Amino acid sequence: MNPATLALQDGTILKGRAFGAQTDAVFELVFNTSMTGYQEILTDPSYHGQGVLFTASHIGNVGINTEDYESDVPQVSAVVVRSLSPVVSNWRASSSLSDWLAQHNVPGISGVDTRWLTRRLRDGGTQKAALSTKGTPAETLLAMAREWPGLDGRDMVREVTCEELYHWMDDEGSKWVEPVISNQSSVVSRPWSIVAYDFGIKKNILRHLASYGAHVTVVPADTTAAEALEMKPDGIFLSNGPGDPAGLPYAVEAVRGLIESGVPIFGICLGHQLIGRALGADTHRLKFGHHGGNHPVGHLQTGEVLITSQNHNYCVTVGDLSLNEVEITHKSLNDDSLEGFRLKNKPVLSVQFHPEASPGPHDAHDIFAEFFGMMNEECRMRNAE
Image (cartoon, rainbow, N blue to C red; front, side, top):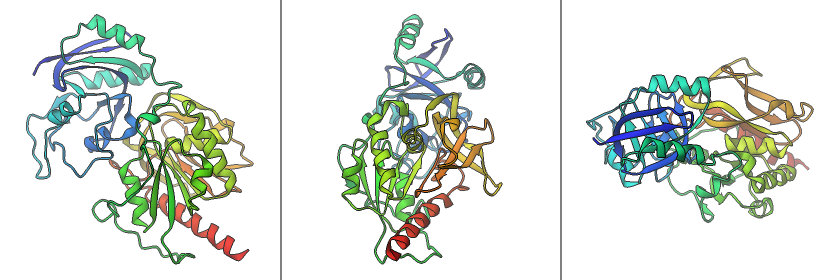
């Protein structure tokens, strides 16, 4: 392997071994504490503009396969690992991790002390960084990292959203998500119709929605509320995505109109943050974000603890929400940050974490059932009028 150099904006310089593409990259460096599922993490559009530092010490042993993508290409800007497996040992693998990253022009560095580096990010906060796998001097990389504008206030969603409307016609959950058999009789005799906003949507979210037998229409991020409502959906889904929600005023405006329409809405991650901003709340940057498959979240109404999958650097400021309008449903047990809420007088619910997991635990799968129950109740009320 060729040498690689990683530079952080605080002046930290780390040397290691290069893998993946021979190139330079500038990004925001975050750490992920998941023990499995590196392929799903690397293809999650929420990581667009970021480099991922894996705390699991050995990465790459199962290679890359064509079935476990969360999007069709790697979304990360760089990969940082302690040890890259020299052997791929999985019957589904079609490529090694290094070859796949090289194919998509993503550099990686191995052989660095990821435990030390994780503590540095935890104590000092997320940092801008630059990585070279082609011999660029450390001083140049440091200048690149410091001069890069970062993600705050930027619209990263336009770089990952779909270009035009499409209908989800792929998996209906048979491989990844068990088809749902509801014990609640539907008030409609047809499949549910859902419009899903693509702010960087993960495929496993679409699989979950389809597992309920829904017809899902995926629309670009800049779709207006009027355009979405013209499709006469039973429900609206607002997806995860990358970057700062403050950089998406057009999306906030659309979400505000959707809330006013009374159509049931379910938001995850960035979708949750956009609902918060549409309600007048601010969003703020967390010190080092939440990235991993082992984050405990308290469900306030039941006292239950959910172990969740998370990937976000920004959070809705809970003090900005009106408790006359909003019921807080979930909070992080690590830092008490807001993890979920629902509106008291509108059919709207949202969570900051990822109930579809991938990778991660399945504790929160039932939140999808809440969304479909909310649509069922709204149709029942309309029919009774």
